[in-house]
Image (tube, rainbow, N blue to C red; front, side):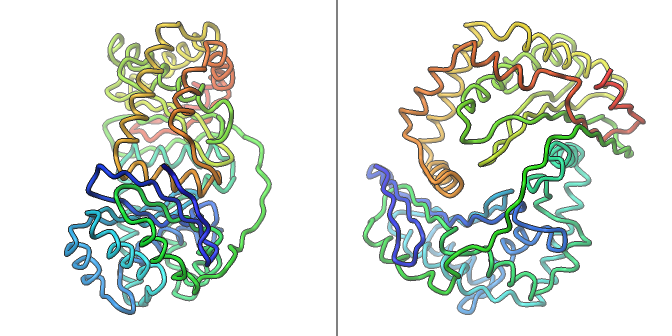
Length: 416
């Protein structure tokens, strides 16, 4: 059973107890990510996440790691477009020590300038790694293009130039504005003592500001654009994208199933046509990128340079067929079973359950009953899929990005 309570400090705690397991996963979710940033501090949310592991007033970075190891725990963090999460998983008997460690990081991190210099270089190496990985680089680029300058298009990592300008004052200033009690959700799933968890967090976040400082923004209209980067590589990596729907849209379930049929699995149309039948690509597929208020549909292919145009023609053909004919009952039935199975498998993982609870409550201010989710997938009809296909089926309207070893007239190939 899921319980949601408001702590004395104003922060929300969501708990789901499962008595038959012997572990628990706990996450502290902050509604601050790349979309909250501006050019002068691009990458600061991710920078803060790194710095939380570099030492507190009570513990050095090594002692943080050692104290987690002493309780047999696994801890980590991640930064996204809209949120940052710090989490730990350990045995049920040790989750209370794990909670104290996360609280220490959140409220007592020192942000030592010397450590900041070291970690800045670490992140710069991470940026280089992404740039040196063509499929990662092309996904970053297409996200920026399809967002048309909106906050969700911002890079999570930032740039070496923006990071160089973030000193301790800018970093802590941003943290003080965004890490606020009204924009934090604490999520826990597994086997634990509910009253003990409430007691640990009840009054421990009082040092944080009460309300997050946010700047309102207007969603800019979609604008088609293209980007081709030529490098000394052996393969062409192509991404196409077009606006889709948000996490909270009624059409969400149709989009998930449509994607599964079109390019989300090994039995999908893209995989079977482009890889299995035509042998054009080793890796090909599609995906939805969802946020709390927007989303986009993305198609990716990694192909030999000379096969790029043939692959794009095959993608165009599949989009046309999807938009014209929709899907069959057999395809829809199979997609429903695949998607529902994946969802249920996630529910049976304590970490995944905590992630789902925390993310949905933080970004959408609600949680979903598993039976309702399964019923929503079951209700999707072929007509619903055809409606989703109509939104993403116009090949000539897609943004396009490529990282390739040859000149590629991507705009002509898409618009023709």
